[in-house]
Image (cartoon, rainbow, N blue to C red; front, side, top):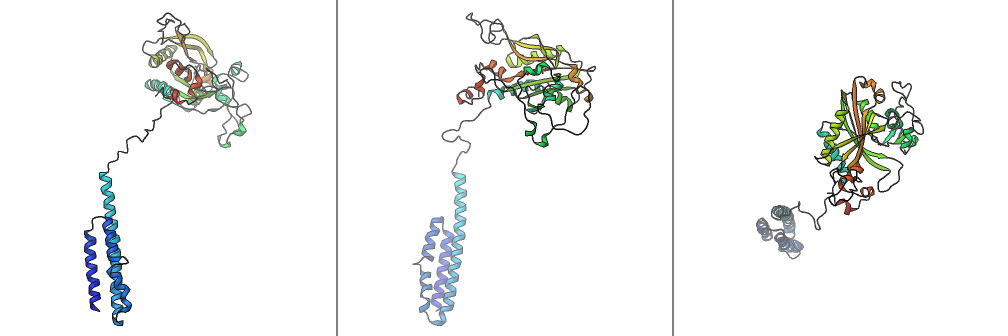
Length: 384
Ligand code: DAH
């Protein structure tokens, strides 16, 4: 029957126009129910096909199904379009400032006082033209002691309570060349694993003096921050793990006056422009002469007394605070790196080493070293 086909065509056009005009996904859903739902006219026509005269069933069914499919596709397409437009609209008009803190605001972390102090020390020396280098915490006896002029059996080895490492526990890849035991000695034969007491946790950052000179010809100006280990108690002034910064300056014609000028500059940069330094004779196997360096007390100004006349507890009434060990590099140390251009007749140098915990405690009045490692946020928050 031509009537039914014509009606199908009419419905299709009507629905197409309505879909094109629909302004929201919700309106489209209404159209879907109206034109394709169970009670829709088109659905009724399709359902009534069986009652049509036989010759009309085919053409009407075909037209009806085609109209149905076309409308389904059209509505689906429009729905996707409208949803995308609605999302786009939302993104531009719903202004959410993603840079605002969450609720509650998440606190921002900060560097620990120790690391900050370490960076501060590095910065002073970077400003003086030094480079920062780091070295291994698991170290060979050769670098930690022997090449620093502590020959095997030297009593100074006993002064540092060393943690030894079983070399068999090391990754074979990490096996290190055996080192000569006296200056100038050649190493012969293939690499052997180190012996039972040849591997240790470094007791100071000084081993990097020799490692650095092995890899870089003079002149050399470096600072070496890092962790060190000694079998010490854990109390207010000791920790089995602690931090040092080492310094090494080697060139032609470096003198003790350069050492003094450098450390004066350092003391002023770290503790204030009024500071003075004092050098006392000291002993370290790898420096000759060796000096202990004090800085004038930044609290009492060097008088040893506070304004109320009481004894200054920071400098213990002396007006001076010991901050580091230092000295001119012992020619015996150069002997181990002579082949790399460190001829003791031609180059001189100075070295120094300081404990970072001690400097941070002095500078910020931290009474107990353990505070650095407890991660108590109340302490951390004081130094942001
Ligand atoms: N390594 C020494 C220690 O841990 C500190 C030290 C002293 C380092 C004198 C030096 C130095 O470079 O010249 O006690």
